Length: 150
Image 1: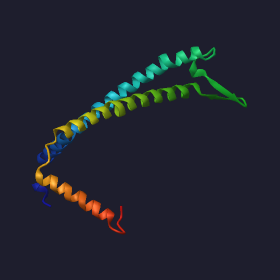
Image 2: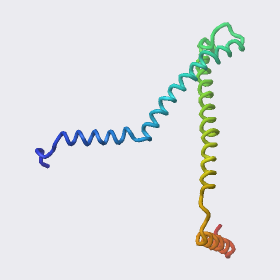
Image 3: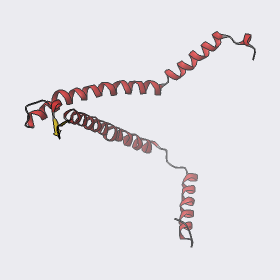
Image 4: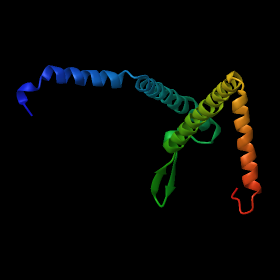
């Protein structure tokens, strides 16, 4: 390899072009936006749990202290469970929100898109219809043959 033939400007330019191609692809940007929105959503849910849900739970459950100080005493050892309970509630709220968004909302959107695609599909040509009929007949014949596998 001839060291004199290596031009550092070309190498830097190609590195910059590769980085630009990687960083500004739609998938990477979508992922970055999703991570940022997810982090913000996590903070909102965390605040909801710590500021509203758990204090309301403290009012309902008989206790003279906040949920952060809830603890069991076993053989003289404190086992704090209040903060853990808050984190479990936090997780359940995030999981429920994700379930409703991904399964219910996006599932509905995907079903709608599939229905639109099926409705927009052009009718089969005569050749295609005949080929489908031949395929179905061959399948039925193979299934009826002795020793045929399902």
